[in-house]
Length: 240
Image 1 (tube, rainbow, N blue to C red):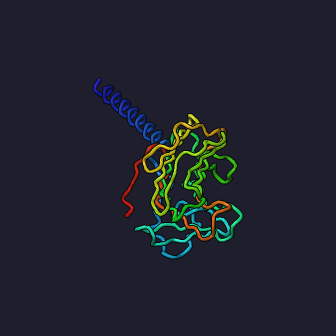
Image 2 (cartoon, helix red, strand yellow):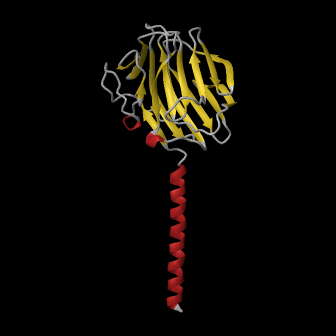
């Protein structure tokens, strides 16, 4: 009888361990706070072009020809990535993709970034699928008028706010993949809420930031503090 009880206890304990192991594995697979990209450019050499080393190094995977992308120590208090048009007539961006080439199709995705436009001019933020850029989950344009305009595959959301030059603007983009909607905040103020992006059959895998085809070659946009997570994650603001 004692042996039977011992064996039953062992079997029961093994079942619990197996169940817990499965739960942990499932949790790790979804992991709503997991970081997919995180960098503030503080470890990059100053006054040097950024390399296209990919997300493991906190760098873009691609930089368009004729887009200058140089790490600068000014005008912001910490290093940031200076973007400038060197040949007008075409929109030019650098492209960041996620760790392990991840494509987010379910759950929530949160993208945070800081933009410092040195002057009012046209600059862009795009969210796209991995590898290509055919699916517009959102396209945000900072206009030379000071307006902010957003459009996506569903069409135009119109002018949603305004920005100022020579100042940090902290953008938070929250995508609710199962609902097919997203929200955009700037400086903790909602610009867009519950907007349907219109993309189906694809997930998000890339963030693109750059200049428009009419952006002046004298204009400068500074990019910093990119943080992409599944779910709400944790906004780590200890970058300084």
